[in-house]
Length: 369
Image 1 (cartoon, rainbow, N blue to C red):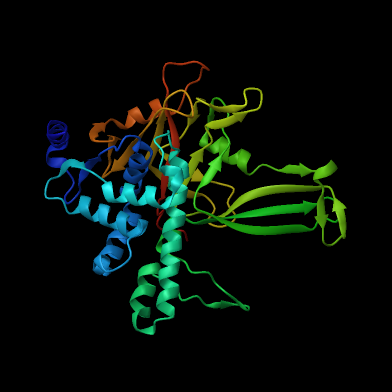
Image 2 (image 1 turned 90 degrees about the horizontal axis):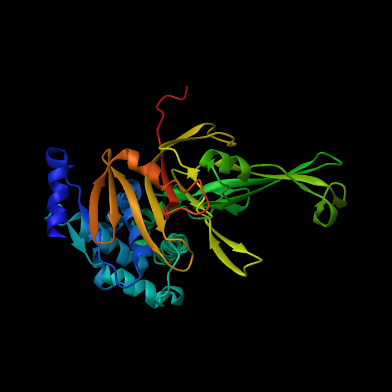
């Protein structure tokens, strides 16, 4: 990797970003699913900064119980504090902890990168919430631990309901969906909010993220045996239902549902459909923050023709340069190369490198007045 590292340094030359580190991650047999997601998260700068801050506020990790959060913070700190600008790091402690904690990731089978991302973010939230609760019952450590978990607005009382803890993981990734159901008899609209850390979208051939999001928010009629119980009519009624993004997150993670269960085959099949994901995305049709704008900074790519085998790599944007991470190897790529990962317009194609998880960061559009 020394040669590849120096090649990357040569390619960037004077433009090598001050203080930035580009390190490949060693693969322990089948851990490309983990490496590709970790690279995307490392280059999610607000998340990285808050994790490093968490680490510096909790230097006494040695005494504390090891968990996925401490292992991730340790890994990111290790990368960011390297003397060399490029190289390879073995995320051994993190992977060992992951396997110890969740048997799904213990086997040498092909793992799903989205399943791992989902598990990791939810696990980090759980750990931060537990720490905050523990701090509340120990007044001495309360203030610092409270800051660590949240950067928090104190959980003020809303009616009689206390707001749930908003951790820095939530502040980066959490958005709110609203599920609206309109009774077709009395026209009453019932809305139910739910939070999300990523959006899983159904995909179609020759489509785009924008059209997938439109389908996600399309109106569905509930009739026959799917009728809706309307509280106002006190009976089952035909209704219309739709899901809207109420509050868009700072970091929008989109999972393209490329693995579909085919009844006739009795197994999952990979959909290699061409789905265009733009470098800049505008979210229309949101309840709050209409026309929120996002910029693409990370793509986890699934390489292979089926769901049970293959490989994961990631593309990452850092300081206006695009980089390609394939386990230990890191190289620069041209921005135009991103479109080669949209998918295939034909059913059978030799190109099996398809965008699977997309990471968008909210762009501050300045004055909204």
